[in-house]
Image (tube, rainbow, N blue to C red; front, side, top):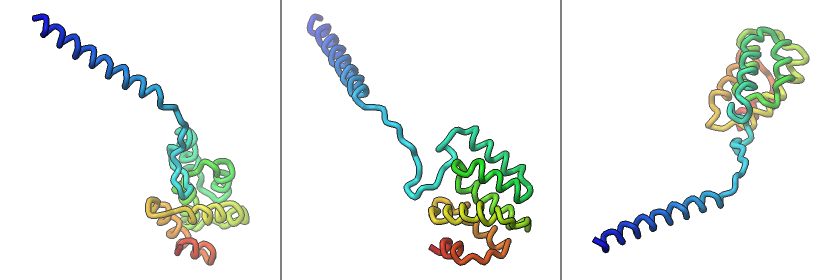
Amino acid sequence: MLNRLFTQRASFAMMRCLQTASRQQCLMMTPVAVRLVHARGYNNFDDHWSFIHNEINFALNNSKNTDNLVFCYRKYGQWMTDRQIMYGFHFIGMNKLEKTPEFWNEIVPMVKNQIKTLDRETWKALYMAVEGAAGMYLQDNEFWEAVEN
């Protein structure tokens, strides 16, 4: 009886020791802030606050002319994801909207820079860019070379 009691207490003590060791091990890990951005450099929807992502989506979906889309690119350009950038470009191309000087100075350079970072994980954005450029009959060698690479 005494032997059995001793064994139970020893196993309880052993378990308690293991729990304490694992707790101390967990405390030894230091908290590190990590930003999960793809190595190629494109933003994802969870790289910033969700309300910014939703605000950009609402602004883009309610922009029906080039001037409003240019405003969205100016205001939200640093937070836009690859698909949001390509959405406005695609919308202008497929709906044959006016290509103002702001379009050429604001939107097209941003699209060209974003195209260089796309890979096989972001094929939807690449598809939207190519279809939008084809829809507006874009004759920009730099754009098409970036697409080919």
